[in-house]
Length: 479
Image 1 (tube, helix red, strand yellow):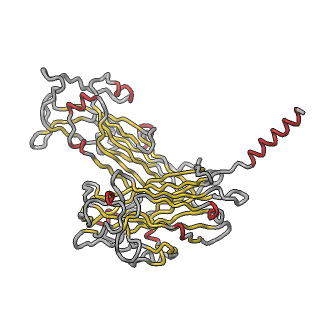
Image 2: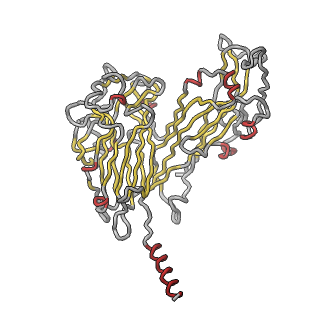
Image 3: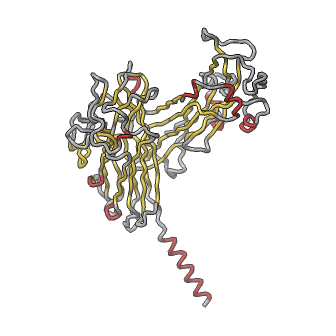
């Protein structure tokens, strides 16, 4: 009897293993066609949601509204899932896509980096598509296509924001018909910018969320050599019949625009983009307060992104094991990462003529922390002295490492590098400071005393202090 029980248990375990199902594979492919655009362009017009892809490189776009096609140069990205059925062709779950603008109060606008009052509304047209097993042609699943953001959903020219966030679910019975499902996401700038008055009008019409749109019926643009920037999160999920998530992935995509720059050709390179945005602290640091607070103060935010690059897996390699290379970021006080020497980060007093004053008590050393918000494990502290005598001597361990997002769509393998984070400043009090010890940077020399009878002012000379921080980016792309 005991032997029979053991046999039954063994069979149950084996049966359980046989029915184990690998989850679907989500992916996002960011194209380089409109990650950086001219905000005055007239080629990003709205579409009918039953539009089909115009499969030709000879006609890249259209200046007409509501065409029955969407075009190559309008296609910002593709997001989807492969392997959505098991070996018996049973669907693994429903597929849900959520699209949300990123940033508190930013909404569906490109905003000028150094003055966010200037902005340009935008939208996305997302076309649901699928491919059946063995088929050599894609199919439209138009009932699950949708408009997102601020755009004209019909030919009236009236702009609308239907909802700040968008969620669409393709049910399991529809998923069952396909081997892979995805959305092609097309950029929409409709209506076209009024380049005479530098504005886009009629922003409010149809809006159910005026707080997301600002305080005026018009949006104004400013001619600038700075980028206009926006970020959107795309979250794709496979869920079972009980609304439990089987697999999920979220991707943040940054897109850029420019408006009447002095040299438009210099703004168009979209393969790799890095920008850093100082906050008010960077220009108004109270040295006494920072010294006494004994804490980190945020100076700036950074964002780094590349487009998606295709690569071929060598024989015997897997997507997870193949090394496509990394991006590395570090800080120093020198504008040359390979100068061989760099001095400590130091706030120096400047005179009324802008010259650094050499007298005693006219400088104070500080540290800067580079911290990824995308990957909290990536954090480094710098005292300014890091530099290398050559590229060959570069040490990746001294840097914040940005690893690639690797994925496979229906046909190709892709990699994309993306990171965002902050720069923070700290003033240690002396060589024995715990922060200096913790991060192993060179000792500081901040043995300042307080000015009596005040117990908060240190004996620095009064005045304005300044310093430079340089961000260095090193890549070892292998594709």
